[in-house]
Image 1 (spheres, one colour):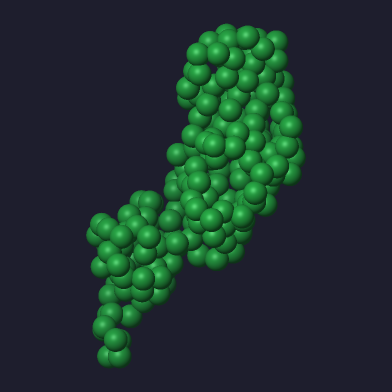
Image 2 (cartoon, rainbow, N blue to C red):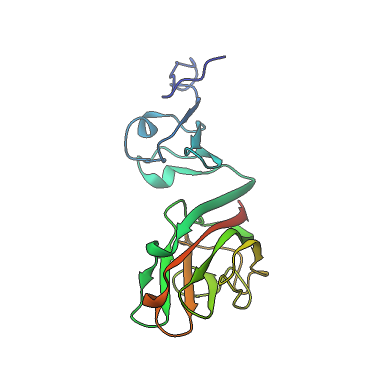
Length: 196
C-alpha cells in the first residue's frame, strides 16, 4: 500500500473531506500547506531522518500550529549534541537547547538518560543537568558526570514537576571546574521520554 507524502483528500459525503493519514520528513507547521488543508482527525507521521517517528493528530481547524498535537502514548525526544554546540555562559557552564522537539502542554515526563558519551575533557570535571530553561534540573536528580566516556549515564528521576501545563523546551547545562572555554572535546546523546 502506498502512503502519499501529502494528504490525499476525499469527500466523505457527510461533512467535507475525510480525515487522512500521511507521512513526511518535514516538521508539523499547522498554518502552512499541507497541514492547514487537512481536516480535523487527520494523522501525520513525522519521520526525521535518523530519528524516531512522531505521530501527530489534528484536533481542530483553527488554522494554526495549535491545531496539531502529538498523538497520545509514549513519546521520545532524542538528540546527539557536541560540546561545540553549547553556548558559553562566560563562566564554568555551557548551555544547549534541544532543537529536536519540545515537551507539549498536557505531557508528563517519565525520565531522561544520556547515552554514548564521549568524555567532555580539557578540564578535570564536567557534570550535566537537564531542565526547561527556568528549572535547571527539572528532568534529572543530582549532577551526573559526563567527564568520562560512557555507554550510559543515568540521570536519575525528574526532580521537578513532571506534568506540563504549558509546552517547554529541553535545556542542557554542562558545568566544568573552572571555565567552559577549557572544554576541548565531548559529545552525548540525550533521550527524554514522556507520555501524552
